[in-house]
Amino acid sequence: MRLLPLLLLLLAGCGPKEAPAPPRKLNLYMWSEYIDPQIPADFAAKTGVKVNVSVYESSEEMLAKLQHAGGHRQYDLAVVSNMLVPTLVQLKLVQALDQGRIPNRNNLDALFIDPAYDPGNRYSLAYQWGTVGLLYNKTKLPDLDPSWGLLFDPARVRGSFVLIDEMRDQLGAALIFLGHSANSTDPEQLRRAGQLVLEAKRNARSRGCEGGVGGKNKVAAGLADLAVVWSGDALRAIEEDLRGELAYVVPSEGSIVWADVMVIPAQAPNPEAAHQFINYLLDAQVGAQLSRFTRYASPNQAARALLPKEDLENPVLYPAPEVLSHLEYQREVGEQVRLYDEVWTEVKSR
Ligand code: N2P
Image (spheres, rainbow, N blue to C red):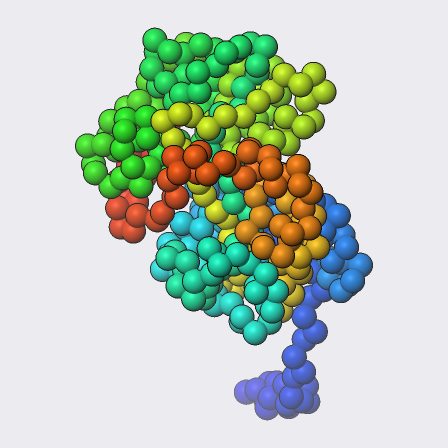
């Protein structure tokens, strides 16, 4: 037992520990193709904090990573769908923001302040917003009648198509086609919507179900005529397509409008840098640079004032009022998300 006193002596000899210097890096977790690489580079040059960007292609993948694969203590900042905020809070996967460290939050549009999904913005601040619609090749599908029937009504399917591997968006589109709310929690409506997606998946013209930018890439590469995509990814494809063959449309039955937000995972190694980076992203200049790259709409009023007129007038980015009035704002559905999970698991496994 002579070892113990020695050990105690050694430990005491270490004296009171000084807090270790915070790591000079920030791990960011977000959808792919969702940030201008110049933004983290500029941030690193200004602050000395290097930003590592890791990407995901579906909310399902993101949730699994945060919940079961240590993501909540690996990442410092995550960009996620706003409707998942209550779930992330309930699962204790995110931490409250220190609003005092984010003065640029005042640049956000009133619409994104104190939202229903996160009262008081305790946990989240808006990043970008957009719509769900169809990216298609005009030469393959001339005079397209923009309808969800292009996927769900075998009599109206006109070309090969790609579904989107995003539960709420793909089931939401089917619900809208059936004349229901994209936020429905009616088990029968959901079951029917799942059935439609399954039939579409099995249609001979289906080219699969792709997460994130997958559908966009297939249409851009000529591997499919049409894909369910998000507005910004569509616009990036349209602008990169030198032949000018691509177009984006919101189906006439209506569609979904969504928003993504920034959250700090519960045990983020560097919450300090995360707050700093959130504030940086909410700067007017940086916010404008962000939307110039992502081709999504900016929730940042001060940034919008710096965006070119042709962006603000581009209906893919900022839908016209008559289109917007057709769109449904995606909401979280509480416990009832179980119904979606069940139907979606069924769709994906068959
Ligand atoms: C960017 C994906 C945007 C996410 N590639 C849509 N919620």
